[in-house]
Image (cartoon, protein in one colour):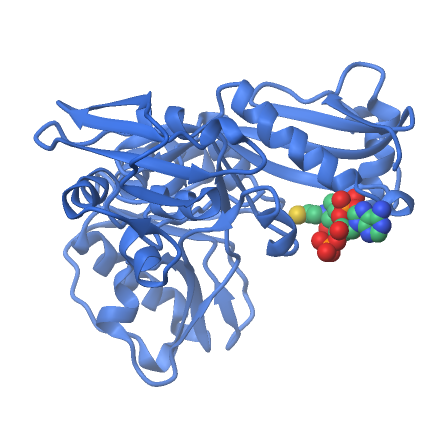
Length: 389
Ligand SMILES: CC(C)(COP(=O)(O)OP(=O)(O)OC[C@H]1O[C@@H](n2cnc3c(N)ncnc32)[C@H](O)[C@@H]1OP(=O)(O)O)[C@@H](O)C(=O)NCCC(=O)NCCS
């Protein structure tokens, strides 16, 4: 077993960091010196030294992610790479094991990532939560609407017009990033020119479109969000115009998006794509970060199994009232609700919610009233992320 030391990247690591990175993410081509930067604000880079030489790298984007109205610090893990000649010798395992603890120690109670394969990240307590549906609607099956909302066009520079609509969309779901200006620019600053179509003034929906002039193709709309039903209908109405010389359009919706329930027709295709995995790195901090409605209260004792971070196990006496949550260490027995940390993140985010986990024997609950309190604090909620990293 090699000697592996994982640590934050520092000045002087650039050659080693970018050489490992290029073999996975830049076709083996060297990065130009001007791109070989240390990470900037909101972005952390890490290296694993293997017998004194940088053999693995990864990055964490400092995000803020929703759980309904609550917004929690979330580390978006990306750019995980082990030098090809050092793979399958435990380096990736050492890197990820260190990283989840490091996020906990640096006030990042939630983490998310897009996995190359999910089982690798399950070993570190991550689990898939939520569903991203790709809706593909042929032009010939387009639902009909009469929308009275104005439709107007802006550029990525007009992102401020979208933030309230986006915040309403994100704040009624889990797992979405509350974007900073820099993050909006990252999302809307693709290499190609993007056009934003806005429905309503102020915006009640929007679509980000990378225009293609080809006829009778099926084009993908980069991003859609809506804050009202009228906004959603206006959005589909606007997209019908875009689809007029296309075979169809596709776009992503969360699992609670209306298309499947309301407008499905033969020929439309709904597929689940690009799952996101989440992990709770700090169970008590994540629970304290919730924002229950001020008119609900309850208490339960939670036990979480977490082999990598035993400090998460509790059991935790959780009490919520007047809009805030208190969490204290409880006695070993008795507990009310118990599950593995991978399933806790699912219940925490809300999809699959606690009842689905119980039904499948994945979580265990002992008493009805405590379980009701758990459900009240962590109700089922569609979980979704529109930021890719
Ligand atoms: C994915 C990646 C980060 C994993 O890192 P790694 O160092 O190869 O991972 P590990 O060695 O810790 O574990 C990988 C496998 O090797 C096995 N392994 C670990 N040490 C071993 C050893 N000494 N001998 C044999 N097998 C070993 C592990 O059990 C694991 O097996 P699994 O497939 O059953 O899970 C790395 O392979 C990589 O960079 N891949 C290309 C880029 C990529 O896909 N990145 C992920 C982006 S999300």
